[in-house]
Amino acid sequence: MAIPDNTPIIIGAGQKTWHAIDASRTPVDALYEAGAAAIADVGSSRLVDAIDAVAMIRFIADTTPGIGALFPRNPGSQLAHRLGIKGAAHFQGTIGGNTPQYLVNHFAGKLAHGEHRAVLLAGAELLATLFAALRSGADIAAWAAGAQQEPPTVGQERDGHNATELDHGLYEPINTYPLFENSLRHHLGVSQAQHTAHIAEICSRMSRVAAGNPHAWRPHFQSAAEISTVAQNNRYIGYPYTRAMNPILAVDMAAAVIMTTVGKARALGIDPSQWIYLRGGADVNDIWYVSERPTLHHSPAINLAWNAVSAHAGITLDEITCFDIYSCFPSAVQVACNAIGLSPLDPRGVTVTGGLPCFGGPGNNYSLHAIAEMVTTLRGPGGGAGPAHGLVTANGLYLTKHSLGLYSTEPPKQPWADIDNGALQQPIDAAPRLALAAAPEGPATIESYTVGFGREGPRQGIVIARNDAGERVVANTANDAATLNALMAQDPIGQRGKVRTQDGINILDF
Image (cartoon, rainbow, N blue to C red):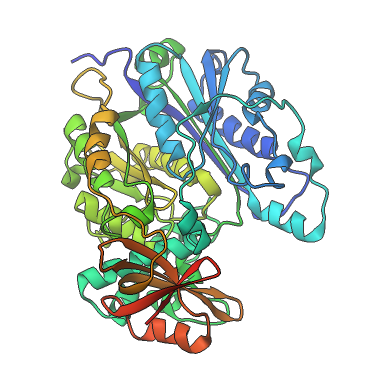
């Protein structure tokens, strides 16, 4: 069957990583280098004139009071000017690690329906330089220069936590994802030592991929023993995660991809060997607030999205050549793998980049690097001898927002059709959720826990529990060393405790 002209494809990808701190490099400079690399990758002198939409991945610090003012309000406008793109519409995504894949899915539909000719997606994070500048007082005022009117936002803007979660420390992912991990370990019925060895092996295998990736921030292999051993330079961040199991936020990185349709690519004379087909993309959210989820170690949304994408593309899990499973923390990898039926130790691997703890975790933009790397992998020897298929899963907030994309060197066997994300979302929205206890007092059973660490040692215990009325309880523990050490040593899931309120904070004594 002839490939329909409106079939969406990716035709260009570019990535840049700068290990040397340089306060004179602005976010727009970084975007320009990645965008120029993606345009050069396409190899068509007429491409720039065809681009009529520029979509930006929002800077992770953009909504932080005081910090957001350091960034340009419409970097896409400045990027387009630098690249010679004229008359393009400008867009930006929401906050969340799912955003790059969400935008690919969104604009694939727009391209297929003729609303755009070619789209440039770009994102950059200069967090290593930003943090250094905040420490040293270096002048980065030039970062915010340029057009100040924000472009339209694609996606839903919504806080990822409720007030109770915020009050008890669940704003920071380093506190929330360990709760998923400990719930998962208890569900599996394995010891703390066994599970630590397992998640360390997952991270070690990702580090082997990073070691061979020139774009990786930490291109070094680490053994499972190194990753799991607590040491001065590998302390706990949130139990049971050592520093080596956490994403590297302080990176300077940028990525860009260019999308168009088969018909436009033909008209521009782009070699079909450059084309990577999006065979299907889906976006589904889990129950929005962590405290309302009946279980903490499952993702019905990823399962629904994967089944829909696989059926839509006619490609099974066994046919996937390579994966990039979102890897902000080991629990995110395992929950996603469980939802699609993949072992996190599958010999095909779970990452093409090296994963967020090793490749780097550039804010909202990691998955744009994953997509760019997937394009390169599928085109090259890593894609295999026959048709090559790659799956990218992207996760925003706290295993909350999920966007999946299935990429292929092989064209689809049917004309483009949008997946109905609304229909996929319905069973999640209709699913029962737990009521959050407003002012809990009395007995409660622990369902998961973590201990947050500072540089000097354990500093905060966080527990998720359920009271005798079946309501969910979010609480802290006493923060003395004896309590926090007991919390880690005793594996308290299933134990009973008593909740009290102190200065507006729920405290669980166990």
